[in-house]
Structure formats: C-alpha cells, structure tokens
Amino acid sequence: MLNYKNSDPYIEGVSLYELVKVCETPFYVYSQEKIINQVNKTKEILGNNIFYSVKSNSNQAILKLMQSLGIGADVVSSGELKRALKAGFDPKKIIFEGVGKSEQDLLYAIHKNIRLINTEALEEIKLINNLAKEKNKTVDIGVRLNPDIDGETLSKISTGKKTDKFGIDIDNVDKIIELVKACKSLNLVGISCHIGSQISKIEVYKNMFNQMKKIADKFFESGIMIKHIDLGGGFHVKYKDSDPDFNIEMVKQELDNCFAKTKYELSFEPGRYLIAESGIIITSIITIKNNGGIDYLIVDAGMNTLIRPAMYGAHHEILAINSNSEQFIDYTIAGPICESSDMFSKNIRLAKQKIGNLLVIKNSGAYGKVMSSNYNSRPLPSEILIYKDNYAIVYSPEKIEKTIETDNIPSWL
Ligand SMILES: Cc1ncc(COP(=O)(O)O)c(C=O)c1O
Image (cartoon, rainbow, N blue to C red; front, side, top):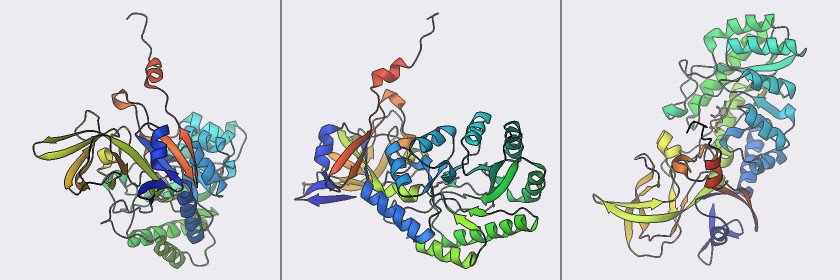
C-alpha cells in the first residue's frame, strides 16, 4: 500500500510523516483508491449482488464508500444495521443474519423493511413468524444452512461443519420446509451459507456450490419458490508471502460450471476480501531489549489494537519505515499489553531499529479496528482515510479519562 517519493513513504498522495504529525500512533490508515479498485474488480467478476460484510470494518466512512460503490450490506446485529442505514444503504440492499438475534433485533429489522432476515435456527423462524403476525406484516426470510463442508481453514474461523454453531444443519431441510409452509407471515425467498473465512481451496468452493444448488432445487421442488442463493464470504487474502495463491476468477469459473443458466439469483457476502489489503497500522517502537537472546521491539500497537495474531494465531507482515542501517537483526515484535500472547511476529529480519522508529503492520483493513478494545485502559486507535492527496481522520477515540468516567462507583463505596 505504501509508495515512495524521494525515499519518503506515502499512501496514495499523502506523506506518512505528515500523518504522524497529526495523529498519535498507533493508528489505522485506509486507501480509498485501493478499496474502490478491489470492490470494482469483485463486482466485475462476481456480478453486482455483493453484500459487504459490515463486521469486517464498520467505520461510517468505509460504509459510505461501499454504499457509493453500489453494493449492499450484510449485518449481524441491530447496531450494525443502524450503522448501515446511517451510511445510506437502501434497506432493500441489507441482509441481516447472525447466530443469535434478540427479539429487539428482529423487531427492528422487521420495522426497517430490509431485503431479508437470514434465519439460523428453527426456533428463530417461529419467532419471526410470530413477530411478523403481531405487526401484521409478511416478512421475507432466508435460511442460513450449515452444509457440513469443512472450509479447510483455521479452526477458529471455520463455520460450516455440522457441529459448528452457525446456520441450520442441512439434515433439517425437510423440517424447514414443513415449518415455513405453516408460517403464514413469512416468505422464504432465499437460502445462504458461509462456511468460514480465508478459504483458498477451489475444491471447497466447488463442493459448496454443488451442495447449495442441490438444496435450492429441493426447496423449489417442494413448492417453495426460492429466488436467491447467497454463497457467503470467506475469500482468501494473502497475509503471508507463503500463503497459497487465490484467484477469484477461479471461483467464478466454478460458479459458472455449477450454475450455468440458473434460475436463482446468486449473491456473495465478502468482508475481508474487499478491505483487508487496503488498510495498515502505523505503530512506533517504544522500547528495545534483548531477553534470553531474543531481540524484542516493543511497539505501541498491541492486541488491544489488532487482536488477530493473539486470537487466531494470524500472521501480518511487518515493514520497517526507517531502515537505513546496514546491520540486520532478527526481531520479535510485541505489543505493550501485559499478556504473553500480545505478540505480532517472531524472528523477522529488519534493518537495525531504534526507539521512536515507525513500523507498518500490513493488511489490517479487516477485523482490525472493529475488534480493538480498551484493554489495559489504553485508548482505541484512530482511523484515517486517504484519497489521492487528501486525508481525513475518520475515527478519533475518546480520551481515556472520558472512558473512565463511564464507570460508576455505587453509593456504598
Ligand atoms: C455470515 C457471514 N457472512 C460473511 C462473512 C464475511 O467473511 P469474510 O470476511 O471472510 O469474507 C462472515 C464472517 O464471519 C459471516 O459470518
């Protein structure tokens, strides 16, 4: 994402050194140009029925940008639904799913007349029917199925196996059909699945597409005229140079093979693929030390800024900005949080660093800021959006004093 002018680092036309003057590290930076290119490429290959997975990055500026590019939104809570509506998404381009929606969540979604609510449990179908009846409405629903397909990805981001908590087990398709026929306030208009994230193997997509087509036909033959099949998100992002190559055109090839001349409208819900590579974190080196022969760089970004390495064992490439030294050292890069798992990378070879130097944590646009926390009473990171020669701070955290004020001390203390 960085380019260099006279050896100074830039994001699009904005100098990184300029950003560091206006924003305290650690902070996130996004390139609008890169997001636009990625969304347009995805639309060109997979078509216009793309529903951006809001959970991956829900900043209002990012949502407004996604909306302006003509795609829809996939939300998993009423909070995300409110964010999507505020950013200007047409309710008819919003899908609401999620493994545990409360009655309030469902009522809000019904009230807002969104495209559809994707249900993930037989009990939830009954509840939506009751709520719709009370409100004198007919509600469009989809069912998220669990097709029992191993996404062959990290276990913590795998969601499509029979025993996973997500979706409705495909063995229950007959029960769904029977139930939906009895639910007079519902229209079952689509089926969906999402079997996990970071899925690179084309065979997995092929199995999933075939499985979903078979199930869609079964619904159709039973007299439930579903209109669309939503094939989820999960497209692979190359976080490591050694990661397998992933080509979305191969997914399109399998899609065409499986759904040639289909009667169903096909859609996808990518998050990571649209935004991960368009974001970086800028962090400063706070201190340097050697413990037991390990050369540590302790930086001001931690698991509170980006939790993916600590939570999933995920890898992010790290780049040094100041690398004038001729001497190279294998560094271990860790955050300031009092947890051993607060570690970004072990043994990465960088030019010798000094305190105050800047490092860049790459491919952090998805599941980054949205998962950040105030752990250890540290402020949340800021976010900056770049477009050509312009930048805007699109999120400024509240001061930690303000966060502390939200606690209450009871009268008896
Ligand atoms: C139902 C659903 N759809 C889409 C996504 C987006 O996944 P990804 O960011 O890997 O594309 C997720 C992520 O967890 C999800 O749960």
